[in-house]
Length: 425
Image (cartoon, rainbow, N blue to C red; front, side, top):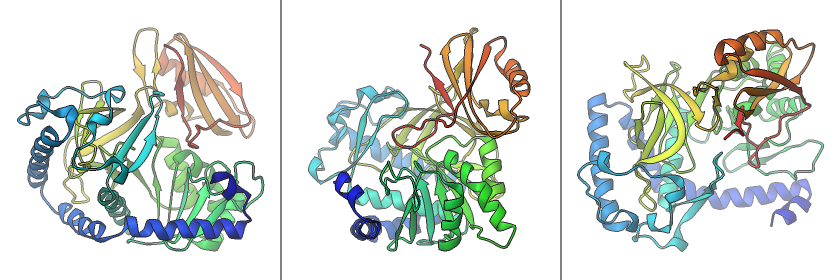
């Protein structure tokens, strides 16, 4: 099917995109979606105590349901979640599917993550609408109501991989979305497309949006297009990326953390704080920040006390936005995306190395040996290594730093950018 689509002329590809969107629209936005949208908004007005009580009730129901209907959990006690073992990705099998559902009736998503372990996640058509409700509620936090127009710069395979000239996007009139390819980053072309379609918000990978922001800034200074908000997802949002995106598009960035396993949802509010939604999942943080998550709403494939592979840091207190969901200080991304020092420390958030660097379009850190990191740089001018070396010495000690200058940073098969790649074992 993909080969047939790629061979079609642009007008026919647009028809195909809209035909698929029309079919999917009914699956995504039915009565379940609208009911949950109302309920989620109501939850945002509850106190912290009310939210945590609601969560405990949901956990108890989930455990009782799992013990009765999910073969992998048979014989467990529904009394205490903390006594259930931590679930690793490699341990997930068909035995984690509920016997209330026929596998052929379920939808599915696939993920391999950075661990290289493939996983197929199954969920019902009803739960698909629940997921959409959570996504649109987050958009509402930025003042963007349901079915506002949008541009999505992510892994959508909407144009053939070998295409070299724009347009690198297709218009979906049913959801009013400009579906853009993150594999074909052409800043001037995308800036012109945003000017033409003027989406209310932009959503995409931070690494892609970071590259697209500067032409938009130039247009904005002459009365050009500016979105109401920018949403980032699917990659760790680095500090320098946030700054570049907000400067480029003249709009606040709202970060979204989710996962293909649909077990945890952490979202940024207008006050700039990250909130973990207790109505989506239950989050446990181990001493080193490792996230152990339990999805509360996907009955077809409950993942209970699942090691998702990411790290986060909790934050005390309440938020000025008025929403009582617990706060998260930061999300640090994949456990694998850390540099390990000879002393055994795991170091993350290494975008700080580039705080004083100039003429850097993109950079990537690769560790192949315990005492050395390689920094790949796509430079735009006379890049000076000294400030980066000085920061690396402060953060990493006496590790060797080697620079490689490249024309572009390779993306994963899904079009995502990995800032740190650890190949040392």
